[in-house]
Image (cartoon, rainbow, N blue to C red; front, side):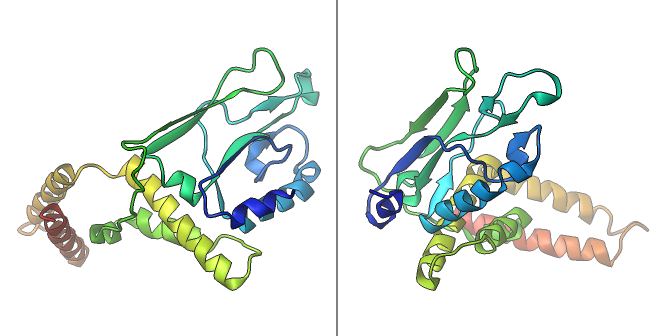
Length: 225
């Protein structure tokens, strides 16, 4: 049975192990990328066609080493976890830790996933105030400019899934609670308003203030929902 058949199942599923391939040039050290390039193209295509996400990692960037000395030494990230959007949506948080390479040339992988409810399927919610963050736009752009060989309908579905995945990851790691954000924006507004009576005030400051005012209104509105 080919692995591609799993993408047709309406179920959460995860794939893990030594794929003997890397996704990008940054996932190896030592030697030439030409050695990995053919497999890398096929591996990227497999992930895109099957709507999978790399779950990332904590620890060393490489999971394999040939344990040779000097210029002959090679490292690569050959082992990883791949999951579909249904699996990712089941958990509030997850992380993959690369453990020490003590008994093998490969690092063991330890995946920890937590969920507030075993039966709760999280609904994705986009908050309007996210528009005020450049990182939001960058993550959406990253999702919709990724390469895919799927047909148009599958591609749109995959891009939407990627958008939710990237935005949820960004929200979890970088966004602070609303009350803290509101306080920070108010501090920034006060600092710029203090310049209004000085020679340092300019049209750029005025534009920055207008943006902060809009952001403040959006945050207050969101905080009352």
